[in-house]
Each structure stands twice: as structure tokens, then as C-alpha cells.
Amino acid sequence: MSKNAPKELRRGWTTGACATAAAKAAFIALHSGTFPDPVEINLPKGGTTDFVLTRHGTSNASAFATITKDAGDDPDVTHGALITSSVRLLPAGTGVRFKAGEGVGTVTRPGLPIPPGEPAINPVPRQMIETAISEAAAQLGATPDAEVEISIDGGADLALKTMNPRLGIVGGLSVLGTTGIVRPFSCAAWIASIHRGIDVARAVGLKHVVGATGSASEDAVRSRYALDETAYLDMGDFAGGLLKYLRVHPVEKLTLAGGFAKFSKLAHGALDLHSGRSSVDFAFLQDLLREAGASTSLVAQAAAANTAKQVLDRSRKDNLDLSTLLARRTKQEVRQILRDAPISLEVLITDRDGSILGESGFDES
Image 1 (cartoon, rainbow, N blue to C red):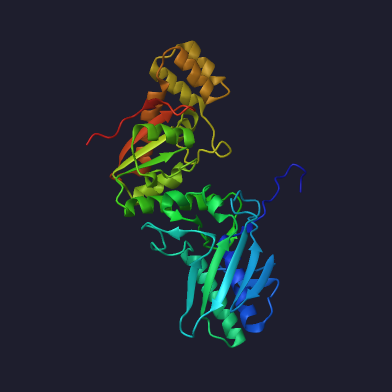
Image 2 (image 1 turned 90 degrees about the vertical axis):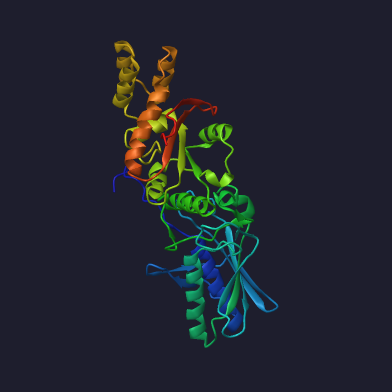
């Protein structure tokens, strides 16, 4: 391999996989008196993996095991978190019951895969734990009946860095994972959170939702509208993830808010607005300048600009309203993405201080 070849990114394991392995180890210990270490689990899509226990112990009629989450090279807020499953045996025929321990949230709003009042342990991790306990019980000649309480050290603080508060998940993190594997920089978890945000907004009857690229653009929307916290979908760079889901699961009104550079990419067809995955097309900005009536000199200067902001700043010196034109162009492009979804759309171009530089207005009713 060449010295300059990119390093292969290391995959990691979901919170659900860690909780499953910990639950299996604790369940086995209750019946055998010994904790398997490492402990092996089956993955939902096939294959197995094993986990080393960070700590374990027994207390009265329960046992616990803890695993340190390794998210690989993914920028996951739970990387390094301690995931603990405490298991208590239940009477035969009870099945597996789940409980939210410290640092694991509780669902309080409809629209999520788990109903209100339940621990925020998603369906696939639940199934993984039930399967692991059932398999262990069969090998031990026991019944697969147990209460599994999952806790995450520092989970309540970590949850503040996620969308959980907006989704109505209180008290901590969610136990997630559909494959057991975290694939580095897949961004799947973020996009899934956007989708769940839309589900919740629809379930609680919100008519108006917001997709903002960052905190400054979100603040601009907050200064204009008094919306429920659930309305803010934390789109970030994942415009495609938001718009394609809304196309199938529409709401009445959508406000998109973002900076000039990011929305110049969206207006030109980019659905992932991250600087590493899409770039500003300066020929497109030249077209905007021509439409705004810019001088030939200014149009030529834009071709050699280093940033979109540089083009915007120069146009503002000449009293050219490039932002409103961009808002309209962005709206046209987004309308193509939404197709015939019955959504009234508004686009706001915002500055870094949260002020609105240009807007498209909503569709006429």
C-alpha cells in the first residue's frame, strides 16, 4: 500500500451490541456462578463478535456486567462510555423485561419505535438481548426469563449532545443499533435521528418544522417563530436525509435555514452539504451575480474567489441582494427534491450572527 493511501477506518460496536453482551454475561453468571470473559454474541445480520468485560459482579439475586463501548473511528458521543446491564431472574413464563437505569432515557412522546413510558431501548437491541438470553438459557437448561436494566455512565450529560431532548427522550441516551456494528462516518445515526424527529413532529400534530444547518441559522428561525422545540430537526449537513424522508412523510410547512455557502451547494443539487463531501460551484455564483445585475468585473472576480463568503461580501458592497436570489434558487431545487409532496416551503439565508440575509417566502396557498 502506498504511503499516501488513506488509512482504512476502524469499525466499532453499537450501544445495543454492548448492552447485549453485558446482559448475556450477567445472565450466565446468575445460573453458573461464572462470568464468561470475553463473551460472544450473534449479530443481527449474521456473524459473531466478542466483548471483554470492563467490570462485573453479583449482588443479592442480580448480576451485572459492564462493557466499554468502542465506536471505532466514528465520531460517536458514546465512544468510551461504560455500558452496564444488570440482570435479575424472573418467574418462568415472564419473558424478558427492560428497565432504564441511570443514563438511559425514557420515551415521553409518540412517534418513536418505542411507545411513551418505555425505556429508550430500541427494537433491534431488545431483540438482540432477548435472543442472547434465550440462547444462553437453552445451553444452561434454564428458562429465558429476566429483567434487564441498562445504564450508561454519564448518559444524562451525553444525551444533551444528541437529539434526545427534542425527541422527548428524557433522562439519558437511547440504546441504539440495527446491525450491532458502527460503520465509521456513515452518518446513518444522524440521519436516523432526523427521521425519528419527523416521526415525532407528525405524531404530536406539528404543522411547521425546521431544518437548519447549524445553531446560527436555527437561532434565526427562533427569532422569527415561536415553535415547539420538537419542530427543530437538527438537519446539519444532511439535507438529503431530511428532504427525501419528508417527501414520503410530509408536514404542512417547512422552513429551511442555512448559510450562504451551504445553501449555494444545495441550490446546485448537493444533498450532503459537508465541506468534505461537496463544494461550492463558483460558476453557479457567477450566474447569480449576472442575475443580480453585477458588473462584468465583479462576475470575473467571482471565478477566482476562495470562498462563497468572499463573493457574498463583495456583492453586498455593491448593494446586490444575492441572498434573496439564492433563497429562491434553493427553493426551486428543493421543490424538485420534494416533488409533489404537499409541503409549503420557505428558505432563509442566514449570517453567522443569526440574522436573515435573504428569504424566499412560503408557497402561496
